[in-house]
Image 1 (cartoon, rainbow, N blue to C red):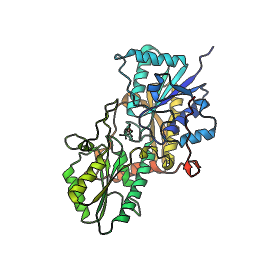
Image 2: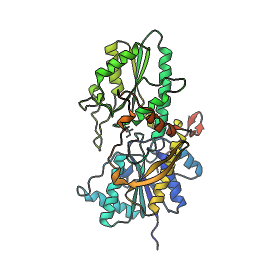
Image 3: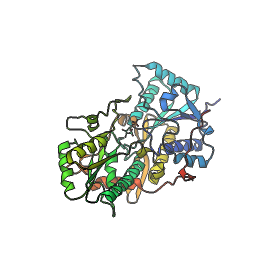
Length: 413
Ligand code: F6P
């Protein structure tokens, strides 16, 4: 009897508003290509090790469910930040994973995640080759941070950038309404860890009717607090409302994160990343004390990665495309690879799925090139803006029920 052709898919790392569109792409393509069962790991590889998984056909019943899934933020299956040990450190864990894979007749293992999650694909595909297992391991890119190597950009980034740019515009408008013969400084904090792609996206708020933020600080350029204060004081001579965008990951010249000055950054995850938060609050407090005017800090925090009501159509469609492309690649014999997005043209914007060896991607961080930040290190260049602009285009309207977006939610037994 022929072995059944089953797939298992997992989601890992920080969620995005389109990570489920990739899951939908995996599911739909797997069904179209004749795979028998599509299993979903609950909470990624961490849950899978506990044999926590679902048969996705018990969750997705129609094309309408697929459409709903594409519009649902956060990881439908649950996510994790779990680092597999090196093979020699704990071979038992690998034996266990492959035992579960054999038990479920898994032919293809797909992991939707960022650079840390690609470490899992790298290790499992290496182990399979080492031990002569036949399963294929494919990565699907995902991260709002846009810090994955070799892909033009990552699914999740465009929608987060769209939300950030729109919210920055709204914050600027709000502040302007309240500054009449009175100074006010607003500091906005944006996620992205050590990469400033998302913080730079605040520059998109500069439109016909909005000046955009006054200053933008990315983690790629050391942050000098005295220079920053001087710059703000200089600007206050010309205007009453100043809006500054800072990355959560800006660092002092001595390498400390600015958020550490306020006592933030103590929690460290499995990949050694400090939790970064409190940068804007610290800087707003500092400016308030030094200048003596009203200040406000705003952390977009998890809103920027879960605002699926503001998702970019380009992003939702590309997320779906890369999910499907991973299934196709595995079905055609690829393993140990990650699907990437190649930019085919800028105007009109067009993209296509490509594929790269995951060893070249895992654990690497792609940061903003220095020449896409101005000389002073306090704004991004037109080249940067031109790169992002196509990625925030179009809407993917939520299905509204009683005034609110509807989501597809996992039904556990
Ligand atoms: O990697 C995605 C990301 O959203 C980063 O931008 C951010 O630093 C991190 O996740 C926050 O993770 P958590 O929600 O687990 O604190």
